[in-house]
Image (cartoon, rainbow, N blue to C red; front, side, top):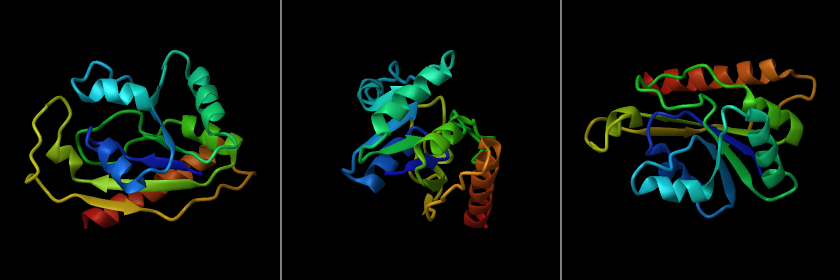
Length: 167
């Protein structure tokens, strides 16, 4: 079991990560997409919906579903999709779970999907660009690290990996 962090650029990120993970049990932490046609009802059944007004409630629910179980927790640490294809600041909620659950972080960077299936459209253009996926080695956080240290360290990996993939 691990906490899997993925940058978020497109709704296609979700099925791609599902394909990478295969059938291994996992739980998603995500925004409420229940109103998105076709995908919304499916996601609502598979995800813990993040309540931005009650973030601690969401973290407790995620912790309970993962703790002492053979499941991965998948999180988009940026909190939402971004249209420019770059890594944005991370929300700190994942660091709370990393510290509490003492699970390794598996970082995944995906490039190009922001052009193939942009935000606010239902049109997929598979010829828009190439997609690259990089699954990093597990990151083990030291117990002495603060939440801010965890966020900073992981964010540095994401920005460095994104830069090398784009070169």
